[in-house]
Length: 319
Image (tube, rainbow, N blue to C red; front, side):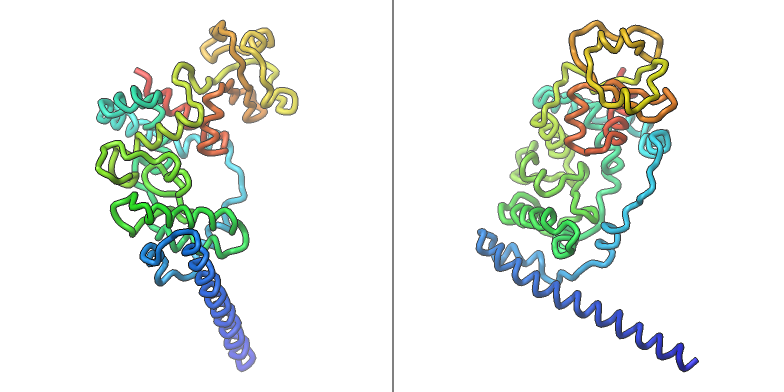
């Protein structure tokens, strides 16, 4: 029992010492960061958003312990394109159609796509994150794993306040700093955020005009062309060899000659464009031909699963 008590006491001091060291190290880092921020034109008033910032164990744990297991596409899709989201997306698309049509006319990005991104990114604005934007970014910038990336994003976040672009300084985000109903990182906010309602602020947390316009602006400036679709599910025999076919690019006529066709049995369109084949698994059941617009979706999120799910959900809103 005595030995057990000694072990417990020793463990406490080790944990306490580690925390104290981390806290002292963070304070030193934060002071140096603030000095650099001032030299780069950030005011002391803006830097008040970092008052009381402490290293967040929760943030670091979430960053380091992201799931390593890989979901199958079917399981991923059933999760992010659930029946609830399908039905909710149809309702939201109908209710917001006048605004979406206006955005589509101005930016050249269809409303179905915007609603689908909105649904998957933040569950229609219901899951925006509750972390203090500046504190969580400071924790990640101080941590060694991806410090360079998050340090830049922290400077960008401070610039949002410095430029008086938002209504308040108490900005909330996900643990990695993604903000608002469209889950923009601060760099994306600065580059693509739009004050669509002309009230002098960019509100991607609560104003749908700004939210949809900012999303459309991002996609438009990254190459979205509304004359074309993102891609389509296709069928064909003997395409279950990823090494041979996956990510290969050919003209649609060439894919037709190899035996690919639409899932309803019809031939592929006779248009002179190239498409990339995605072989998602070895079952021949998840084959997709994707076009340039799909590459634009990948600029939003580099996951094929994410981009496919956005496209599939948007297709359910046709008519």
